[in-house]
Image (cartoon, rainbow, N blue to C red; front, side, top):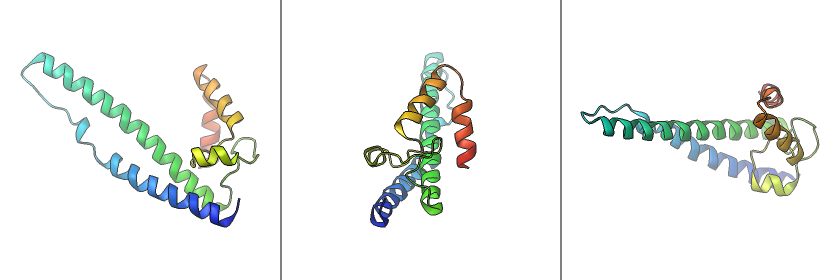
Length: 128
């Protein structure tokens, strides 16, 4: 990957990082609201649960973006963390924070579906 391509992806990742940090800082939606009406309490709890799941998803994405920026700094950006093969340019263009090639990501997703998350945990440990 050329230096100009890496700089382009670095700018994209930095912009995404700033956007996600702004979203993650806003935690108003997870505040517990009391209500005299039991149905309103249930509605608030449901909305809070959805907000918590969204916050969790955005936090995980922010972590992935930060790790991608770290890989740019250490020179390993664009290389799969599992098999150490080059990640396809199309995948990097679509998901600049991708840490794995498509084959390794599919394997990690399959393992996660089956409840075997050691593959994914090992990669996060190696990435950090």
